[in-house]
Image (cartoon, rainbow, N blue to C red; front, side, top):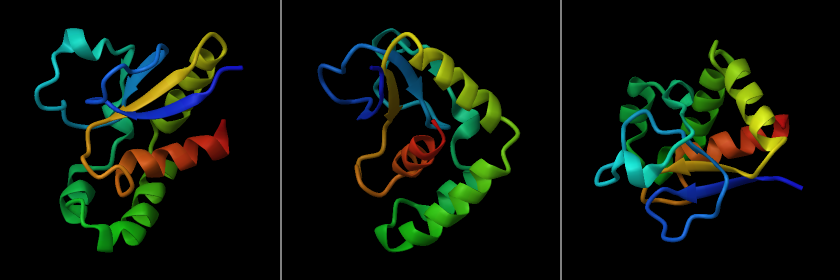
Length: 119
């Protein structure tokens, strides 16, 4: 059975699968060859305004999560993104890749929770 896997793009030895970067900005120090992405879903990432407001401050995480979920639910790209992931999951694991240093308080964690509730 295939699954969604959340990983930091900087991790060594990433598992095989359909690779989706969910950051709006390209990760520093990662070449496009090394990233080997199947999809760069920058449209699903938080808006620049929300990202800047959050600033990776763990104390703002709860409010950030709520605001980001609102953005996801109102994003016209969300349905297409979900369908892309569902299609990929028919064939292989899907790696949701992000670059944030904080592995607990970031937009990819919020997105992963959302995806697990929808897929």
